[in-house]
Image (cartoon, rainbow, N blue to C red; front, side, top):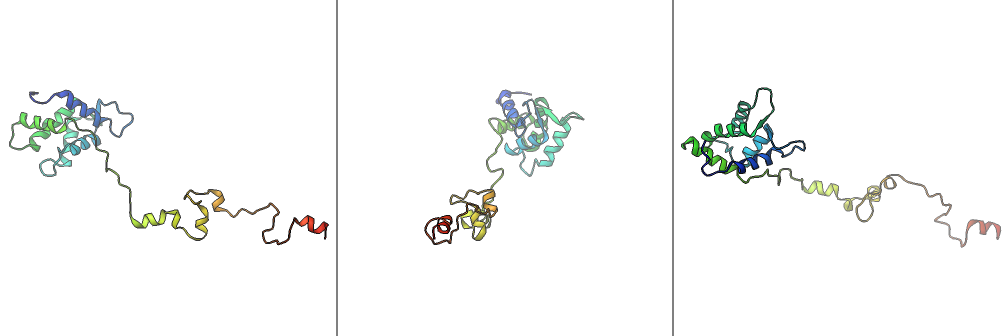
Length: 178
């Protein structure tokens, strides 16, 4: 295989970045099927017409060892050589492989926008503690932070002070000094 325009070191760098994506124990020397599908999707190797996700899965199964669940960089290159003619129809095999490498170079796994937070008006209204009323309102302080157990239970005041008592002084003073 001719390496005319593309350096294999750059392709291997992208391979390693995708190989460790989402796996804290990964070394970057081997890539699993999920990450192979991700590199194909993120680098636009799969286009939905010529190369589909099914094609990617079939090629991955073809190049990996029988009992293995991962592929090495060499097996990754074999997979790309098989996918290249499908992706770039009408080009020579060498040209197609070079163009495929061109798609991969300098790419990293895309994280932005993978999981979006729901921002529906109904959800926001239900989770905004400033809009709570009644007994639920008492479970939060003014800043919206929960009070914990104190907000859930009616804790009796055992200090002995009676709030509706209108006299001056304490009860003991009233009884002893009429």
